[in-house]
Image 1: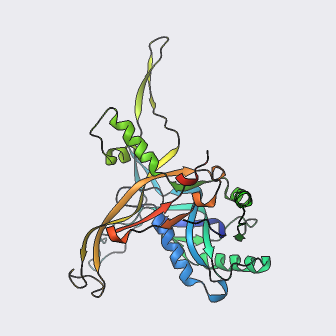
Image 2: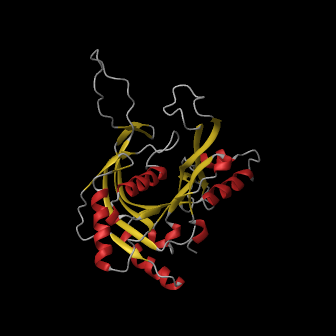
Length: 316
């Protein structure tokens, strides 16, 4: 993706009861597709005097609280609310989603006629969009008023010069600290697969992906006295399995699938696509492209996915 010319920064959004289950196999933070969906919903809500084209989005998490408790043996159980009773007075059989509270900052790559050099105008647009966001939901959670009145939303114009461009981003990324940005690191999956295949030639990419989802205890023997101890294997980087979109299983013409909501639109069954994400402190990102996520569909092959250019602009 080309570098963004303008950034909209919404700092310290407090979100309550967001969906903590990101896919059938992952949990702990909303999927990036939830934030991209929020970006599209926000763009549709913008009036003409505030309208911006929202093209990419980045997320920085400052704190989070998953509403769960220990269920023994490293298991967690979500705190579920009681569902309304059915007509017989029994509890309805509804499985509620896992919930979490989080404190996040959002960074958008934007464009449009309202991106001007007038500071008063850009301040008005940023504040107006921030007000609209506080009446919406992010990943199913409610946005509540921020408790930090010193942090204000900003609409920033980025310079064309490469050095000034990076200097401008470094200036504004300090507003995102302390926190961790979720980026895509698919190379980590390939590297882990190569590592596994040195001892297990039959290892697959699924084995490598699952390797990131568990703790590895290993026995360490002291060379001096021969004593041993068990410790968790330490791997550089905070890598996490994440969903990145959907892949097509089968394609059907309009009306072929029984009970479909829309009988005039082609229908596709899909399954989740997974990769490896990494939590990175914003001070390690030199360019906004490393932070921002965007839609990168391959319609010919039936792939609907999100992408991020962290590897292309990785901090050395």
